[in-house]
Every structure is written in structure tokens, then in C-alpha cells.
Amino acid sequence: MHANDPEDDPAPEAPTPPDADACCGSGCERCVFDVYEKARERYFKALRAWQERQAGKRPGPSRG
Image 1: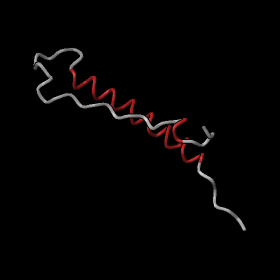
Image 2 (image 1 turned 180 degrees about the vertical axis):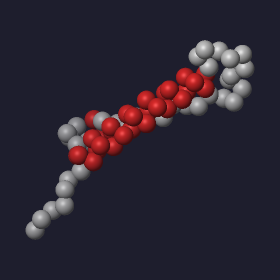
Image 3 (image 1 turned 30 degrees about the vertical axis):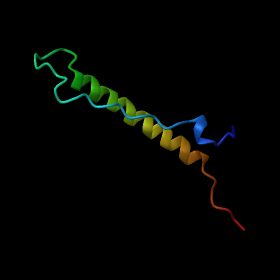
Image 4 (image 1 turned 120 degrees about the vertical axis):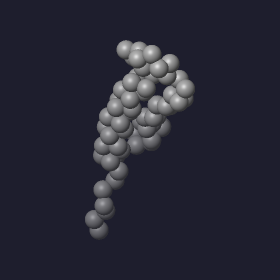
């Protein structure tokens, strides 16, 4: 693979949201929706970092 090949640095995948009925409604300390929100935070942080890396891989405008 080439150094700038996107397969070398795939985009992060968004977490799958839990089903609406996945919450038992008992006020668990680690509710599935809380876990999902934390996963989304990690995903968006990873996505921003990935986008910055991808922007750095793009060839600049050619001067001619």
C-alpha cells in the first residue's frame, strides 16, 4: 500500500446507538445510553484527529 492510501488509516466508525427499549429504566449507574454517549465522545474525538491526519496527507496546490 502507498503511504497516502486511506486503507492505511481508515476513518473511525461511529458507535451503534442502543435500541430505544435497551434501557431497563431502573437508573443503572452505567445505563446503556450513558455508555453510548461516552462512545460517541470518543468517536468524535477520533474523527477529528483522523480528519486532521487526512488533511495533512492531501497534496497542496501545485505551483506552476
